[in-house]
Image (cartoon, rainbow, N blue to C red; front, top):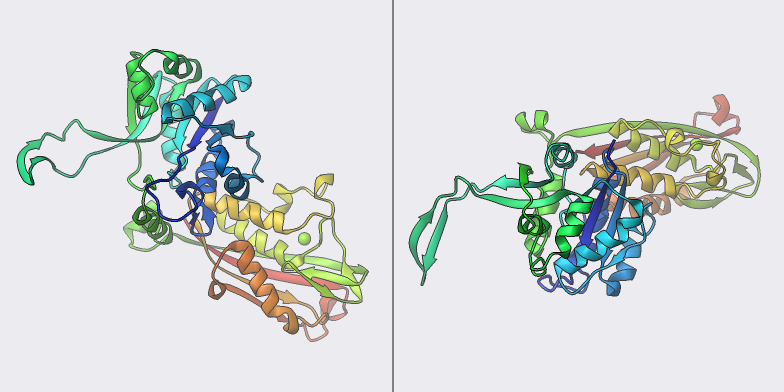
Length: 391
Ligand code: MG
């Protein structure tokens, strides 16, 4: 199988964008734009790895957005888009890729099917780009008056990803005249390569203005699967999770990310945060992605004493990688002691912060089992959770 890498170009300065944070690092429904773009490829089975190119002035933004993800050290962009791509391609050379998909960091809504179509087409063609047909009627105008109508029947709007054989596109970028070309397909055309057009997706928009960001937010909040779209309803998935941890000697427990003083602690391989474990399983359940043990095997020593927020963040990333949004979560802690009531608001705020959700989309509650069963006897704490995900 050929090794296909993604090169994500995110070195733009964002001059057209208001505010001090460049658009690729802005928050989009709880997840930075660039993180969504990276996750779409990182989570894709046809992609072996991801390389990002950034402006060195944005290093702190980059670290905050994707610094924790398993991707290569970022390459440094150049003065032009073309130079930036050249630097990114050079940074990937040691991994000897067969194919590379070049993608705009500011296209966070790229879908897995589009990526797959570009990859598949590279089996037959030297270059392939995602594009959508032009549907608006095009007018030529002069001094505010229409001077003609343009035949749109053969016109397409180029998107990314744009896929190439790695060696081909690296060589094409070195040819005289490549500098100044605005996308990699143009560089390939300039080198005489035949470039295939594959169906992109109208939602795969490029975020260049505040209005684009707002549109992307609307698309994510109303996103519908193909089947449910036909029924006019968003594709909502509800997952459930359940977990139990046993008490042992200690002086505090961690519940929903909050340390609660107690005369016992919870035993477990990680920090034993039973609430976040149930919640993580609920999110994984909504995605049909197995359970927490599958993603973070208890047999793996690197998770010993781990902060369970890492598990939760991974589940949220999987949602973002599927182009989805987390809509609502509900956690119930089941124990006699410690008393949850005094800590409930802190737990709810902490979970909302971890998930980057508004408080009214997060519920944390508690119950006892009337002193019945293992929780009633104070042998441990149980938790159950549901998560609603829009895909
Ligand atoms: Mg657990």
